[in-house]
Length: 224
Image 1 (cartoon, rainbow, N blue to C red):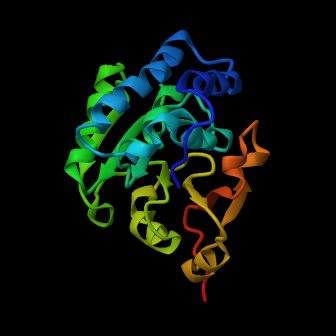
Image 2: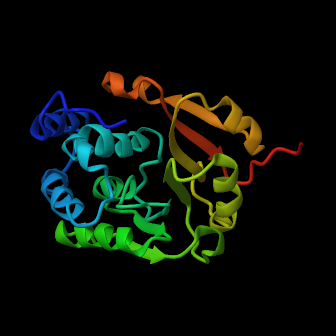
Image 3: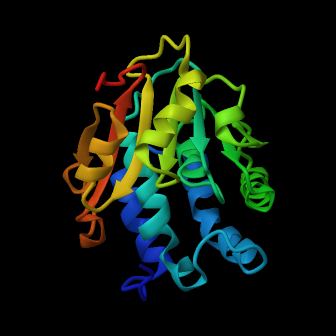
């Protein structure tokens, strides 16, 4: 739920950068540019709750980059698909962090993709492409799926397994960000899922107490 920020965007960014001290100067500049760009675009096309825009780094960028603690960091140019990317979360922050990877931003709402592509272009991200399609009919292939509460886990698995077919990447599979009690959703999904509490990964604020990274390995469906 949107809240009044207890810290300024600059203070939030400083906290974020302390978590990733090895970031290149280019990556730091790109992250710094996100707040003014999203604030400008969000006034025209709503991709983040307008009441929450001043929490961009705390609630959206930091949340997206939590996946970096579990995604493999390899020199190989793997491909990551962001399913239901909206305005570019988690993919835009991850593309800044992983310039060696290619990111496919997939959404059925064209105006949100327009915002994501415009911001990627304005900060000089060359490893991002947008795709206006429904994921279940998407013919793209990738090594990893990322998602930020775009749909129930069972549907996410069902709609994306064909995209991962043939990948030889380490720990290929689905990495999604979800919150709350997930026991019923996981049970209904019919998949074996590994949950990691975000607050165990780094210095995350209380806002993340009930937020999780859910990992489902490629071709890991249970037989019920």
